[in-house]
Image 1 (cartoon, helix red, strand yellow):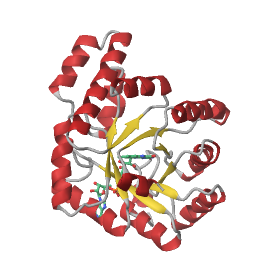
Image 2: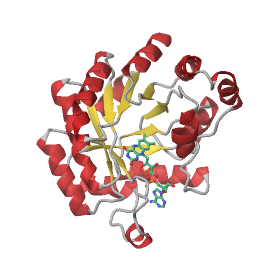
Image 3: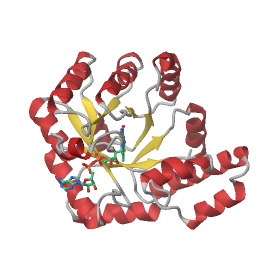
Image 4: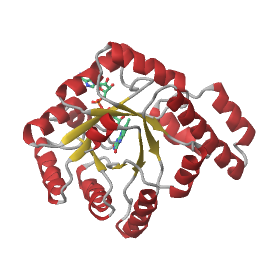
Length: 284
Ligand code: FAD
């Protein structure tokens, strides 16, 4: 179980996403295999917003767990799912022997009306965790946000809400990406003061193209430190140099985290095994 591993040792885990289209499964299996060759402690598989997407998460998570024999964590969101939908997804997990989930609320889908959003059965991730804990024997993890979740008005309240997830049964947390380790250290202090005692995995995303700043990074709500904007200014126009600089930046973040006692790193691999291998090499 991942929750046990986290208690026993330092870990390095990866996140991948399932294929967007039906005919891209072979490629996703290949990505999972190559990531598996790098011997992560576990691989987590994201979940698309909306119920019908769960099949792809189930297939990839099952492949990692049952074919590659690597610990696998399936993400699961509740924003677009009723309790009945969750029951059905749970059954599809159970059919594959999957019993470890990252329980999330999820972002509101663009096509969801105010009425649908306001009348959802499971409101917060903590409600999903409570529900899963009362209906299954699944191990549940939750998400956390070093610079706070974008909807929350204060860091203190966000960490208090995080405690609700721990109280509901979250056994560990995985963090949103951050580009400035000082935010993470500050978050760890605040979390400890609020009584967060479960392990926390630091989410690191290598930013290897300037485009990522306008998409993934800005959506994450993470701030961009000067050291990073300098790097974009210097290398952003040259794809190869930017890739190298992004890998180097992520590696330096990980080395600094390890030196400061952070035991668990979760790499947002973006389905790029070669880049992931280069980061592992750089932190040796
Ligand atoms: P919650 O924990 O419910 O928090 C959402 C907001 O509500 C926060 O502002 C929080 O402070 C507040 N809140 C929480 N509980 C309470 C409460 N009881 N009372 C009042 N306010 C409360 N999205 C996907 O669609 N698929 C994925 O696979 C996916 N994987 C992710 C993995 C990680 C590691 C992270 C960090 C995020 C991931 N996301 C994913 C994005 C995530 O779904 C969004 O950030 C979403 O907006 C919040 O989800 P949550 O589970 O953190 O929500």
